[in-house]
Length: 197
Image 1: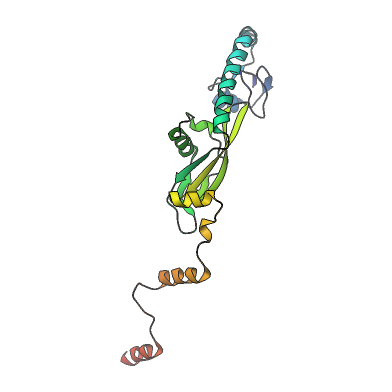
Image 2 (image 1 turned 45 degrees about the vertical axis):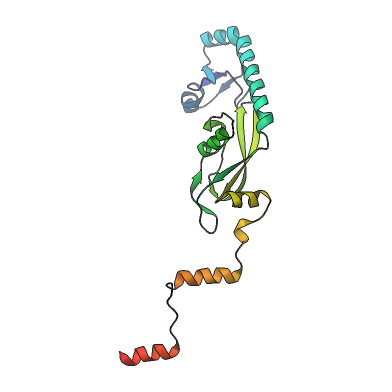
């Protein structure tokens, strides 16, 4: 389908470009979100008549996005989540979680502006791009931790998962293997048990 872009679309083109896209992409994304118009004679005439107004609106939105970007760029946000001993989260961090954390910090953002390419399923520091405007993108740091103390240690660069020594790992593994309070049988106890049977 041939469409006229009403704003810059990444990897597609600038405002006013006439591009060919797949029908589903146009029908399900570009047209409903008012990012493009079908390339018909009437729509071409409409775009030419509205071009100056659209460019002015785009410039205003970009100016607002630039102002927010200056405040937001490089900021860090802490998300406290439950996780196992090895740092595996019981769930994952979604764009909505990141947007909610930013909103609590005073930044009004939509979850669609947070661009997480891969699900966050472990604790740690993650750099996440936030698209404030098609031409304005900033990176924020999300610190996923089990507690505020752990988040502070991660922010300083400590590896919170490397706390246990090999001996401590062996104790934990042994505790998981044996019941609590049950001591291993000695050779004499095992011999008595065999004679009684």
